[in-house]
Image (cartoon, rainbow over all chains, first blue to last red; front, top):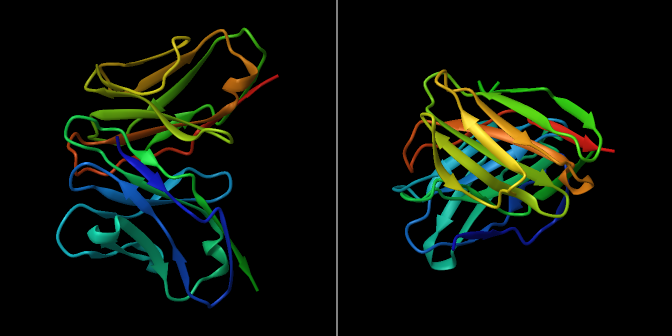
Length: 114
Length: 113
């Protein structure tokens, strides 16, 4: 069964500093991986996705993520955080060819301090 | 704006009642998914419809049901509501295909009093 672990429940970062959010997945085949962001009172917005090919993927809002098969990881990074990046971030795996659901991690809440 | 529309944004009701949540997918998307987000369970997949037919089922309670209509909008029906059903319910849509990302609506927040 597919599953996702986000080890960090909460991260606090200073504005302008770099950010890295960890994601580890368990999946029986080549995974499809996603990062979503949820701002307070908002829905989930897709930041980026990995299907195949280049293991470093670029997303919206200056985010990037790197797929590392050997570590079963898909960590999200941003070089310089803005106050508007304060939100909850979810890593997700799936869907597979016969099961179209997304399995989400528990999320990481990011607080940005001035 | 994801293009997925969910109504209503908020619902407040009492235990034992029945409610209907509505979702209009992005233009051209044939597949609709429902997810529940709660503090104790996180984001959980409930059910998927494709072009009017049920495609996949997750941890959906028997008190819950869904359908997708010919115009592709979908409804999630929750009955005999319990306090524990209080949650944020998301609809997502995508074209069919394993490599197609799902786009989410803003959700319906359901509060059971």
